[in-house]
Length: 83
Image 1 (cartoon, rainbow, N blue to C red):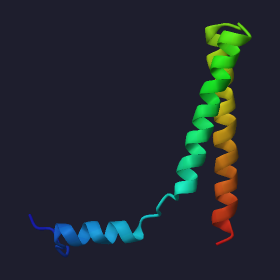
Image 2: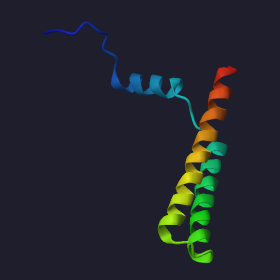
Image 3: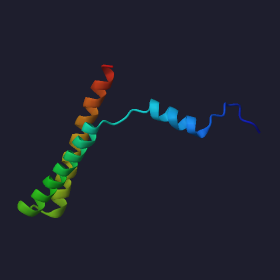
Image 4: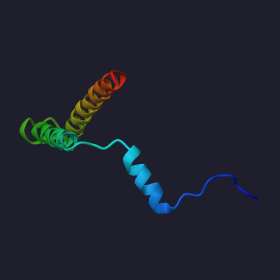
């Protein structure tokens, strides 16, 4: 059994993959880190300061996180469609 395809050396494939892949900017990584820290703070605030319960605090932080992910997804889709 044979496969009809061109063989590309491994180091050339890696170089091609790096140039074609979208790179994540430093500002994006920092924004995600800030959002993660804010979600952790939101969880701790609800759990330790407001004393609303562990499970309720997790649920509230998770819901806020999912809402942030939805907003990021919509913004990313709008930005990508403008290109």
